[in-house]
Image 1 (cartoon, rainbow, N blue to C red):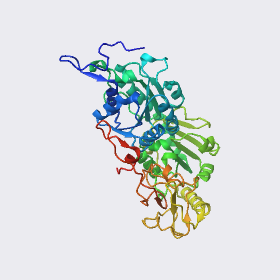
Image 2 (spheres, rainbow, N blue to C red):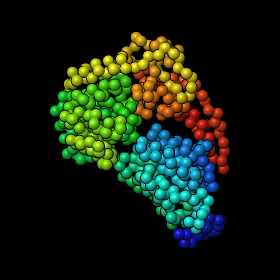
Image 3 (cartoon, rainbow, N blue to C red):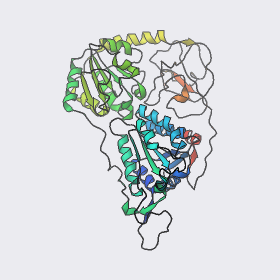
Image 4 (cartoon, one colour):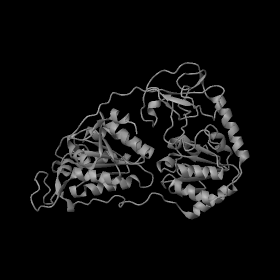
Length: 483
């Protein structure tokens, strides 16, 4: 299993007339740059040291953390917020096993990220090398792609392959194990396959079957009480504008879950949250976009048995799973919704919208717990405050409203998230630190719900550090840098 190509030793200096040499670590960095990755999250380890040198040369930021689990979660979060695949680089053995939870979380969240793990040299395979574990087998159940790189010439090719698999169907994580001698070895540059940027995978903006798109348009034309649920894939595919246009042009009441929250702001006439059970029971057409029939949906049992059900998803394995449907479309949510909006006819659904609004307002008035206590000051606490005279759909714009703690205060409970004004800016519960917010200065007010929300968090004392001449910073320092 050792390499046989000539000139693959990592040590010799380039002599006059010799072909240009490149190491495995530098090939990793070139492939990351071709994918558009500008940041990696890591905890330094001897197995992966050459990757850092390559990243420095390619202008890729190296963010140092204190635990590999943090690196994996950071790569996941980075992918969700930026739309660029996240990348974590960890050492062999416990370094890779520590990242398991973050990778599993990315799989369930359909988040595109690549975890690169070190490994002992191929020449020491099955000999008991340092921190040797069966990483590929461990990662296979929680990734879309898990493989070992067998040769330095294949490094960049397999990094690109891993990214391609990240975007096959619904996005998700990939894992690549690279042995130390593969990374450290140098080969002639012409022997390495280095895929060009934008030239190694197809567009992900699939439209789906045009006949099914036309059929959905016809179902909408004939529906009196339609509704749509916009799931995480709307944000993952950056299809917010298309979803908003679909909802507003066709006058379809919209509900949101997962990362789809914030697609419509709370003040929008077609934005609903608390009337979902009523809508699912009374609607004659229910369109599910980019979310599975999982526990949040009662495995599909919460939908009216008499309603027509349409499911749009990136992954054909999700469509029709756990519940029969009347129409399934596999494709990019934005492309499909745009095509349907162009094909369907706008309808006046004032009575249906008014019915849902009445249910929504009643649920808001009666369902929120009221407290006159001042919320505890903690990095794990977020709270909403609303004056008793304000409308449930009219957000407060006062910067002092969230800091003066008026009475009564409306607390955000785990079951009632504070819906955001924009995608990926919603508070999932009374836990500000678990939201997709970047940590901010203490007491900074964020307009991210129907109420004013303040995330009180202490500024972590992260200091910038240097590594081999690079800008390798601590995670705390990077996370609090304004963007």
